[in-house]
Length: 338
Image (tube, rainbow, N blue to C red; front, side, top):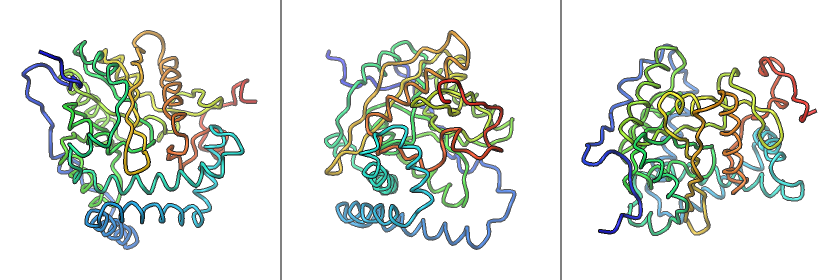
């Protein structure tokens, strides 16, 4: 019998524990949400429902127009992403890349809103996949795989595609406000088969998150971690595109704890409402220090972003030189950055 083109995850014959109901396990918000936040949530919810109901060509055209308008009007965001992309693209291409990143981000949101409505067969026809022999080889070892993601391309559609091909994915999601909108995103992702593992800041929650991801990997499934943005100000310093930045050590720590390899993956947007998903060779960071492992992760993130720099949705400061002094932590520029 021929082997299926995509191996899928899990141990043979074992049922998939998707651990649904994450929204109900999140502790109540300790602070009441103000009127402005509630209004913002209502607007986002309205856009979400409109995006689902419009014909697909209309929804994507409106997203593109919205991205162009945001590029013109959002001066602060435009300056931040320009500084980030200036490390990646040559000066002659920078203006185009900055505008394209706004358009890509607007398209990402429409894709996220519509992800649960995508027909798996149609999604398969519109998606070209490359490099999944790397992921399948990692899963053949039976320890699962840590999927290394960046805020790049269309990661929600990537998750939908993966589940439709038999790869079960648990994704870590930061708990955001307004809570009702966050909970709706959780239910959306669970509706396509994903498991959502909420990210909270207290030590007990972080421990529970790590334990749950370890169980997912032990079942030979995938744990997805967005790893191009540090939210703590205390992550290891690495070199990314020749400059110092911090990236979260989570993928490296989890790999050392479980023995699971790290597989970098991105899903690129293509014209005509099509996609290209690509997996890179697995990283083995079990030996060596946390810092060395984080640098290997940073090198892989750099490779992902270079595939399509304009699809890097880096609207927050990434590089330490761009941060206010009080947010840089214990850092002095490395010799190569001076």
